[in-house]
Each structure stands twice: as structure tokens, then as C-alpha cells.
Amino acid sequence: MSTNPTRKDLIKAIMTNPSLNDDEKSLLVEEFINEINKEYPDLKYHATKQDISEVELKLTKEIDNVRLEIEEVRREIKELDLKLTKEIDNVRLEIEEVRKEIKELDLKLTKEIDNVRLEIEEVRKEIKELDLKLTKEIEEVRKEIKELDLKLSNKISDTKTDLIKWVIGLFTLQTGLLVGAIFTMFKLFKGLH
Image (cartoon, rainbow, N blue to C red; front, side, top):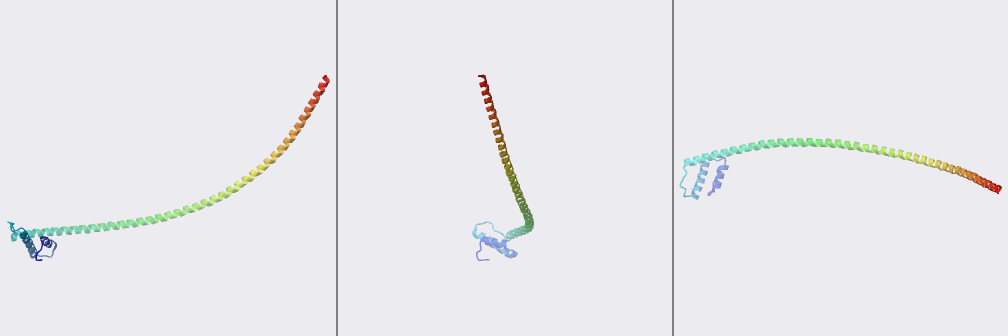
């Protein structure tokens, strides 16, 4: 040991050095007690060798208990490490499974999207065909309407001509009747006078 070790150094040497034998531990405990006696010279109680041996034995037992507790904690840490490693491996496997599922879903959705695009193209073709068909039908209907319009115009024209003929005929007849009636009334008036 050093020439003037502190109490903390002595306690640390006793507690942390497992390679010390009983004689070395006794010397360290004795140094510790001497340090306390120097610090507290008025103490009325002085430890005997037997007291020191008892304290040393208690401390040794306490050190052994602490070592056992440390070993128990190390064992628990090791078990926990194994358990957590196993759980991490399980989680990694789950992640891989989820990635596979995502890839499968991606492929499935890509196929679905492609199918929908094909359907959209088919519908567009059908719409174009329908548009062409409707355009043709509309042109045909327009043509028929023009033909009907022409026929109606001709009929109206024919009807006007016939009507004019009838009106002129009736007008002429009416005029003739009117002139005849006036002439007849004129004669009747002449004959009465």
C-alpha cells in the first residue's frame, strides 16, 4: 500500500480486489483502523484482534454476498439479453414478412392498375366508336330533316298556288255574282219605276 492511504482507498482496496488473501485483508483492515484512530484519538474503544477478525469475517461475507448478487445480476442481464435478442430476431422476421406482404400487395395493385388502364382504353375506344356512330346518325337525321323541309316547302308552295287559284276563282265567281246581283237589282228597280 501507499505510505498515506485515505480511508476511501483502503475500503476500495478491500472491496474491489478479489485476489487478496486473508493476511493482506487483515493488514488493510488494520490500516483502516489505524487511520480512524489517528483521526479520532479519543476513542475509548479499541478493537482487539478478535474484533478485527470478526469484522473481517463479516466484511468478507458481505463482499461474498455482493459478489453473489453481482453474479445474479449478470445472469439476469444475460437472460434478458438472450430474451431481447430473441424478441429482436422475431421482430426482424415479422418485418421481413410485412415487407413480403407489401411487395405482394404492390404487385397485386400494380396488376389491378394495369387492368383498370386497359379497361379505360377499351371504354375510350367504345366511346369513340359510339361518337362516330352517333355523328353518322345525327348527319342522317339532319339529311332527313332537310329532305322533309324541302318536301314541306314544295307542298306549301303547291298549296299556296292551289289556294291562289281557288281564291282567284272564288273572287271571280263572287265578283260575277255580285255584278249579276247588282244588274238584276238594277233591272228590278227600272221595272218598278
